[in-house]
Length: 133
Image 1 (cartoon, rainbow, N blue to C red):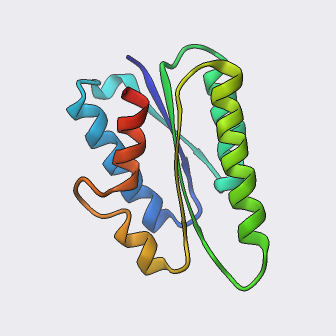
Image 2: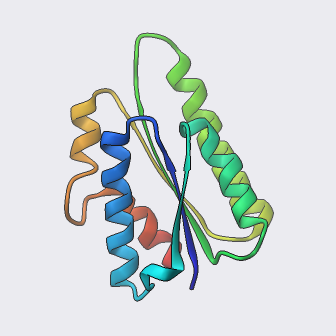
Image 3: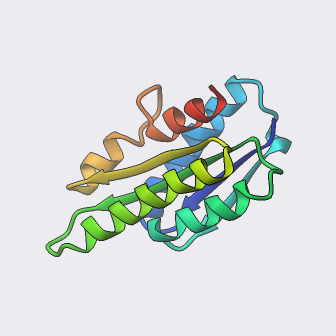
């Protein structure tokens, strides 16, 4: 099984922890490190395009999308969250390849860090597990 992980560079202090959780879950599921490749994108908005491009090659049996949005004072958060969610779902639907939504949408950095901690509650871990299942 070959798995692609697409990680947003924005809020890297959170997304790197999501990636670590995803990689741990994939290893536990029996996916060897040489069959896991990480691709980075600037932000959550770009996750869907990368996911679609990867999935449409049919080289990958799953794509794990990881990002972090922290709500600010403007509606920008809402537009990006909607675009990311819709685009990631569309990538899965149009290609038939499992594409997981591991994008945090939180009010604060503390909330994000709580969802990117070590252990089973890491949302990157959950997204990777969903792709494998």
